[in-house]
Length: 96
Image (cartoon, rainbow, N blue to C red; front, side, top):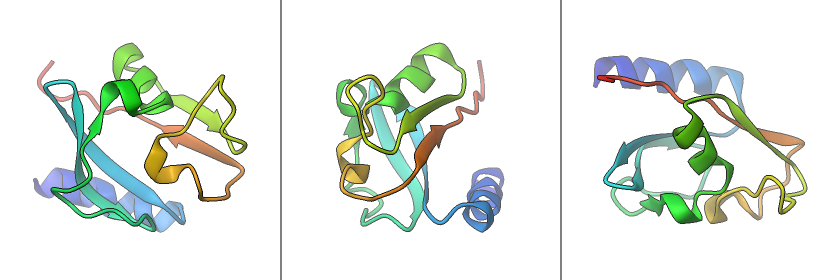
């Protein structure tokens, strides 16, 4: 947990909004967030509703989404109303 907390702090210093999720049984479970209206334990996102985040999980590679939330790269619902130029998902694979 210390490594995840350190990662979250480092990302928060670089981006105005960030969220760190863990993947468990087909669901993104919120670890921590900064700049989003989410609460830990109440912000589970099923992968089939996670937009480009789900593609990052499936591909184990960095994915991005346009700021317009276009159908080609949809953002998850919790980020849909937030104006931004682009969003990035960078998966970190642990234990395989």
